[in-house]
Length: 36
Image 1 (cartoon, rainbow, N blue to C red):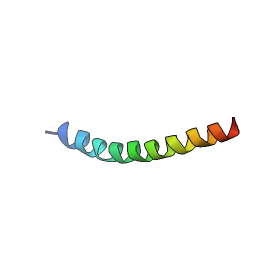
Image 2: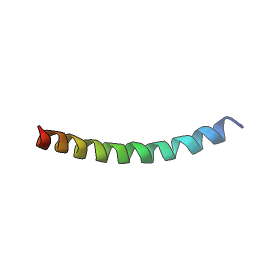
Image 3: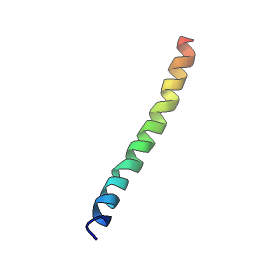
């Protein structure tokens, strides 16, 4: 039980970060292409 709560809490912020990273990744790729 003690291990489940932390995992759920860590998983919750993780998806949010993943989405933000996914949105930022394309932007970075576009910038890299522009710089190229």
